[in-house]
Image (cartoon, rainbow, N blue to C red; front, side, top):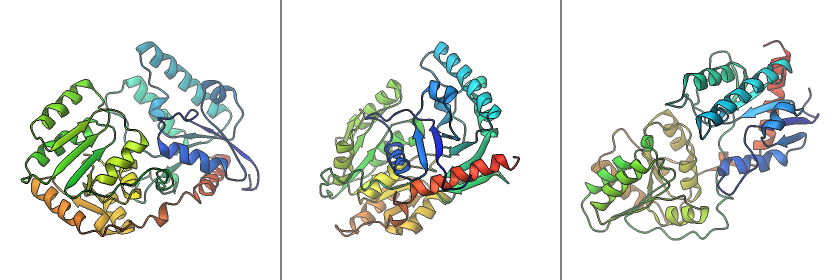
Length: 339
């Protein structure tokens, strides 16, 4: 198939809703504006009965999960049928590597289906230059785009001296409890910490509330944040801290940088590469989060000029659609050439 022919792509995500990940919305817009592509959002009817050239998966674990054991079993059966259909029709799977590992706490049946899904993948897309791929596998790197256009229509408040922020879903691995404890160890009445986001469990919510109640400088808003709320929280912060225990791809980091605020994150190959790309002063790293490390990062963030901006020129969405189209063409070729 040449790049000039129309490619019909079945995505694994449904039509976007107000709470849909902005990455998915911006990707869909980019793909739909790319000549030679027809993009379909997900439904089981479309995936199982529709005619398309490529199946593009993002979080395949969503396909096999359900809100009840019965719903999960039904969806797992449908996923098995989908994989059989893709094999029979020799339709390649392209997978964007949002996560590197299988989710924790899933059943053996879910694990088996996801491994089957992985074996059937013809081409993988990495969102940053440090994504590892299986030896000999076909892959492309298409950098995660920025959020500057996404947040352009919201007010951007001035940063407030001494204000630290965290935003996003609150899960155990994201280290919010650790951040609260470390911040409480900082002296000084001029510092403030704002935490905004929806906890994954009520138990975690109670833990966050209890830790925050110990320090009057900490404010928490444990609820889903609208885009305007994120723009306000990030804009008012001198520094955004995202202390994830395992950080590889983070839309939160790019959202903060798109709103021109520096981030403090764990040091690893991914965050080191990002710092080199956008500017060292914008991506501050640590080996262990301590009050001393946090205090030093707040001070360094305060040295950035008020009109400073990180270099996100490599993160433009302008070329994302074309590069995905090229990846789809390559995946079709991989399967046709006898993989």
